[in-house]
Amino acid sequence: MKLTIREMAIFSMLGALMYVSKMIMEWAPNIHLLGVFTIAFTVVYRAKALYPIYIYVLLNGIFAGFGTWWIPYLYIWAVLWGITMLLPKKMPKPVAVVVYSLVNALHGYGFGILYAPAQALLFGLNFKGMIAWIVAGFPFDVIHGTSNLVCGLLIVPIVLVLQQLERSTNTP
Image 1 (tube, rainbow, N blue to C red):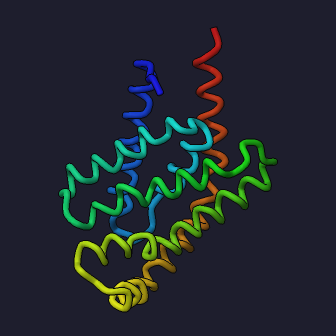
Image 2: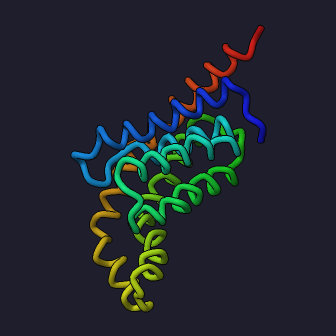
């Protein structure tokens, strides 16, 4: 996946946008636009969406510290990217709004489950301990998934704007 200078600049800005959006929403635990941006960037940029996603992950580690909490970020956002890559490329807008919002919500509801294997490995939890960790975090996952469902309504408008910008800059 060779990148142009234009793509490097765009993906750097999009990754920074993800990080800044997360920082702005820090006052509201588990409510953010990261899933929205991950899905929107994947719909528009496909495999190259990994660049802004991992720029965000790297910025998060640089500014918040590369602690054990950060390790699951190396795969959690790739799961959402991968699921989005498996969705049909062409969906009617009303269907896309529902599908993208539901995928975003499921990622939020399942965040603790996705996070748990790394926690178990890093902290020596057995299966019971890992399940206890998931259950303890469940209320936060409910907030996360529900907010992702609502925020997911922004995905299609963001996709449309990005596609229009891509068309306008790619025409001679």
